[in-house]
Length: 64
Image (cartoon, rainbow, N blue to C red):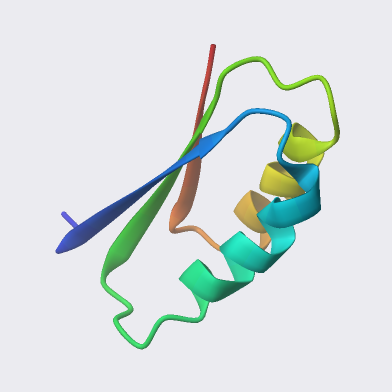
């Protein structure tokens, strides 16, 4: 189990999501889990999250 869980609410935030995700995945503490909660985004937020999930096993998504 990770020491720290980071929960990122994502609903139509494609303009800010890459900057947010880059900040989180580049933290110096590596024992983290990154949980993105997508509440039915209609923009490209789900695709951006999927790209990060493909690159980093710490990223997970919960979709409504």
